[in-house]
Image (cartoon, rainbow, N blue to C red; front, side, top):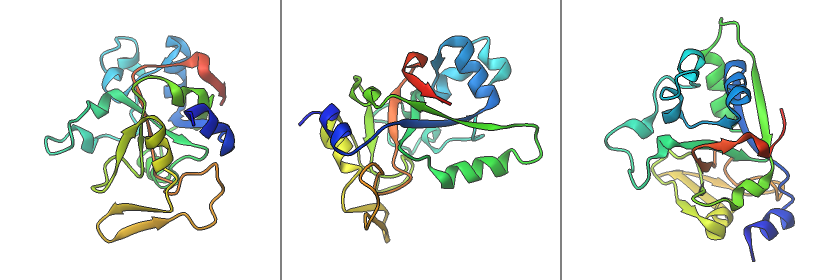
Length: 182
């Protein structure tokens, strides 16, 4: 089986990324979605950049350094991580901001160096893997987030990952040509 076949068989229609209007403006003007790490490097974007989170655990010295995870773009399959989205909205409460969800063609899951995580990339029991095996692991019957905290698949639709905080980690940058809707 291929990743493309798995996408088709499971009815995966979109890969999602949420951002603010400033994030969308930056993406539209550059033609790419950039990783958190790349935002401050781009001279134009450094003026309008407004990262969703002020700090990232991936930046800590104790975090897994198999890859430079801050140089990956965090995406979700078929539904956004509502827990993180709600937290992000609270962080920006009182500011004149609006949010959008960008939907990308699922073909991006077949691109080189894409990693799949079983749960949130910062959780201690996360399993990260590339390729078909990595994608399939996101849909396992049981996912452990951290010791003592598991999520069961139960009756979730096939197109949804077992843990709603599972992530697709896409290597910087993500071309906007694969954007399907906002």
